[in-house]
Length: 533
Ligand code: GDP
Image 1 (cartoon, rainbow, N blue to C red):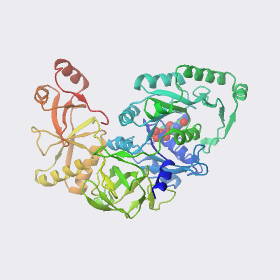
Image 2 (image 1 turned 45 degrees about the horizontal axis):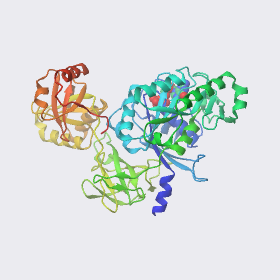
Image 3 (image 1 turned 45 degrees about the vertical axis):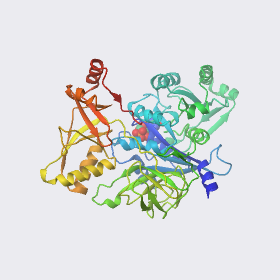
């Protein structure tokens, strides 16, 4: 069996797209599906500017196209130039919810991938949400491929975009495919490694794969004239500055292979797939809490990275998504939940991927499987078969939204406590407490405000407690310690809390308050909460 597993692992690539809303993530996802022949025509989503919906775009795509994508993972086969001859690569694209529903889940998804595609709007450059997600990738050592999207529209110059990325986040772009034609006049791509030109032809409405013509440099010069010369000169300039691809530096997170693309016109999309297969790392083993590595070929193990509770009052529709770390998963296996030592039946492993809505029968490291009926599972939990293993918990991420939660009536004390403990252990929000506020009025800390709505909805639906959320006037948190706490508590615009995991956090009204206190009291412990530890 393990040789099967090794073969399956080798052909898999599991990645997420990190981007700011509107950069083109849905359009790119659709373009990838088109190239993988999952759909025959794009356009369901294209051109729908100003769509306002909290429903995942993938769900919309599913409705519009009748293909099976879940809001969490899309899997497709793709036979790339660097796939084993005749054996398609298996691509898992894990969605990062990131629009209205930006939450801890958005970050947690990044614990389930081996690479990230940073999708940037050519006109806008680096935007806030992309930066936040990039920081998580950096902390976790996830290699990043950069795609400059919307090259068919006016935007910045390639060198401006490259400089911005190098200077602001210290990641050196090493373009593999350099654009021929300025932003707004996208003719094709210079393949910097072969020196060849990939000329694209538009299809009506960008609905089909754009036909490509590969030409020599001479033919490209004859055809594109100054535009070709400019691309070659800029590419040479990059080479002089050492900005050529280096696999080791890419895997170490120091450089980022870069592609210029138009998801809308399907330009550069095949190149992205090729780069993923050629350069992105296949799933690797993981180190457990004892410091031992669980290699991919060991018996089954997986980490839960997301738990989704349905909004109806039934516990049964609770879905847990796991990323397989090692071994072969077969539906129906009874595995062990490491946190409780209890068995967990996987009879209902859900159709998270595939062409139609069938259930999952087998899956391998790097794949994502949804488990229904998963009341006992929380993000970060381990499931295994064979020798016991437990992986480290998913770190909690730097919250930016803080609110108090209280019940509208005082008689529901017990249910309120119970509900709070449950939602806390599931990682729905971070729960902060201090003596002044007491048990019935904890402070909830979240990465995105949608998390608060989930709390009040579930309090009502599952525990029958009506609650009120009231925003607090704090905007940022720092990690401190018991020694610094009393002095911090004396400061105006600061409050100290203990989080359930024992961390002591100080909340600040704003960054100026924090800067002032840091200056006045240099001895106090105040560490930034990194997005991922
Ligand atoms: P998301 O919010 O990141 O999922 O972005 P969408 O895929 O919904 O795209 C946002 C808007 O940009 C939509 O109106 C798309 O049609 C448009 N768009 C996406 N990719 C491109 C592109 O390559 N070129 C152009 N011109 N528009 C694009």
